[in-house]
Length: 76
Image (cartoon, rainbow, N blue to C red):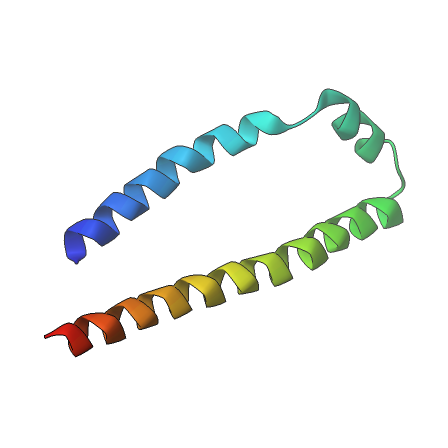
């Protein structure tokens, strides 16, 4: 189990480096040209879009691992 966790952690770290290269120059320039309030609104919008998605993914993974553990215990 520790090996799986280590492999998953390494995979996530390697996959996260490519996300920083996805920034669009036009999006960056238009976002930086807005006022302070507009930049705060964009930041809050990103958080609002990210929190439910992260919650659903976390809930799904938790359910999958819980179901798998329960199934493994029933098969023994």
